[in-house]
Amino acid sequence: MSGALARAAGGGKMADESPFRRNIRLFLSSRLSTVSAAVVLGFVVLAVAAPLFAPQDPNETDLLRRLQPPVWMAGGEWGYLLGCDALGRDILSRIIYGARISIFIGIFVVLMATCIGIVAGLAAGYLRGWTDVVISRLVDILLGFPYLIFAIALIAMMGPGLQNLLLALVYKEWVVPCRLVRGETLAAREVEYVEAARALGASRRHIMLREILPNILSPVIVVSTIRVAHVIILEASLSFLGLGVQPPTASWGSMVADGRSYMLESWWVSTFPGLAILLLVLAINVASQGLRDAFDPKFHD
Image 1 (spheres, helix red, strand yellow):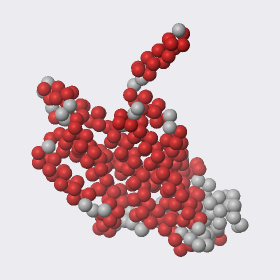
Image 2 (cartoon, rainbow, N blue to C red):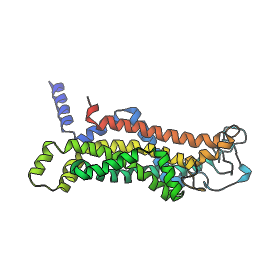
Image 3 (cartoon, rainbow, N blue to C red):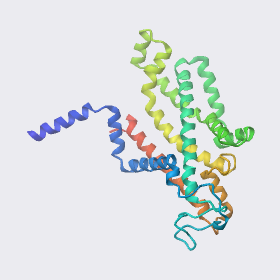
Image 4 (cartoon, one colour):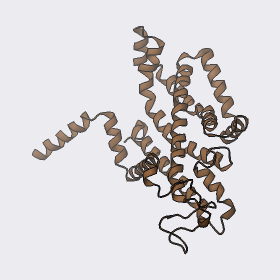
């Protein structure tokens, strides 16, 4: 009898659990998703506290250590664990500082693009009419251009640099959350609580921001998390082509490009920055998949 009461009490606690806490519990129940989130958090900590973790100045050159191998190879030193590049700069320190650039650009671009996309998607999905036509046609036009080529063309016109790189990525990235929010808004505008708010005389702004937006944020957050990984790859690609962050600022894409000429004899110059990109992007994608499974009701048992 006591066991039945305990199970009933536990069931009552589960029933009283808020949806957000339930979703977090579901996310943490996946070991792979939890480990991936820990890896992403580790990269964030490295980026924020780069001066504490970097063993050397990332921009300090030492031609006497030009193409010095990693510590486990002949000629390596413990002060330069992953070796040095063609200018004698510490690769590990540049990877740590390069995490700042990649994570900052990924989060900033997705955050700005999501804000723009939410506003445009809400307006298109709820107001309909000419507003929907104009926004939808603009989205279709931008989707007609491959993302990387579009960014290359914009940066070629504006010039390379961090600010122009951010603008070029935001110009195209907002269409993804815009399409998602528009579709979710079209479905939500016909539900009972929206019709009730409309019948009570609520303004369009109130309905969009207070009634519809809170109920469609979960898929937007999940998709935005996935897009961070996509933006990081784009930034690395543009930096690899010399159109992103300019030297001597450490960037994973430019570090990979710097080692192209030494791949056979000094493979570590390009390999370790490439592995950093792979690890971070893979961790973000796996963690995002866990978020989708936890926060999307369609994937709940």
